[in-house]
Image: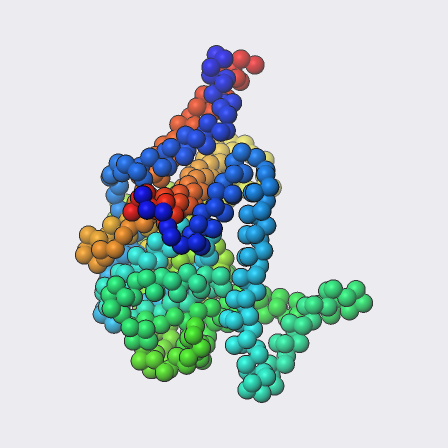
Length: 279
Length: 209
């Protein structure tokens, strides 16, 4: 009985040590645990995969460095997919502090596919007045963003020689760590202008996004690091990307950490019921 | 093992370890990293706001292009600072009123449409789902879940009989929802830890590729 009671009082430093081992061991000795691609990840992947060559894909970077481990691998995978499919990519963001990451992702992926700035992709950066920006894009991109992130007029680039609106963008993805994010895009762009929206979200907010799938307001959803790894797998399987797979590398560690947490939850419950029965 | 030659990577690695030291209790090196984080974040936000918003969207059009209309947003912005002067602090109501009025006008119809009307439509069983068994099953479960959960939050009637059973079913749906949220939260927190561990082992120490 004492042992059962003791299970509920494990020294937290032992838990930290066990978690450290569970996380580091698979990184040093990969276990190659098999996972399967989720239906929602596949939906998002297919929505991008079906886009005709040279059509526009809008990516909104609605996160900052604090959510980088989960959302940045998604961003890289979607960029690689879009470049491999020869889509024209427009990157912007609703989070001011995410502009650096957005630019870094483009600098990483564009050279891998020999893509040229201003012809194959453009970075619009962040702009104050989020709702006004979203409504503005339904009227005219040039009026909303007269210049790109670097201050050069957007119509000086071949990619935006002609003005576009949501009607010219068949699909967009919001990589979102909170508000403003995918919900903002649904409320102001999807509902009003009918643009198809896909989302990549942090695992914390993934459960909240499911009702939007049920109602058809979202087309595909990437939830947390697992979905990022799934997208990397789909890209590799189709031969779209041969670069490193940061999310996939972490999946064994993620699985072992989850296993440890489940064991701890079970032990905690056993101890709780043992103590309660004694009283 | 190929440790990084970059000085910035080393600084970043040590700051990560300083933050992790909180696991053994509050200590001066943790506080040093914490204060640095707050200071750098604020400094970064100020710099990036100046370069991305204030300078291109206000200073250039007003002072370099002479567009006098931009005086209005400048004045509204400056009035926010009146909060620091007790005798003038009432002036803050002007920009607040503008922002609230604009915000409500823009948001209410959009949120009503996206989060209420479309969600109700998504919950209803539509004729086209009858042809697919999986859609029909999940649609029915979803409808029962919404209905019973709403009944759980209906407090104007005594819970007895069928009403009580439905409210009880609502609790089960709520618990499943909380469980899913908790599971995802665990995944998110572990992912953040993994991101840092990957940085330490790969980018800093070069132990893994």
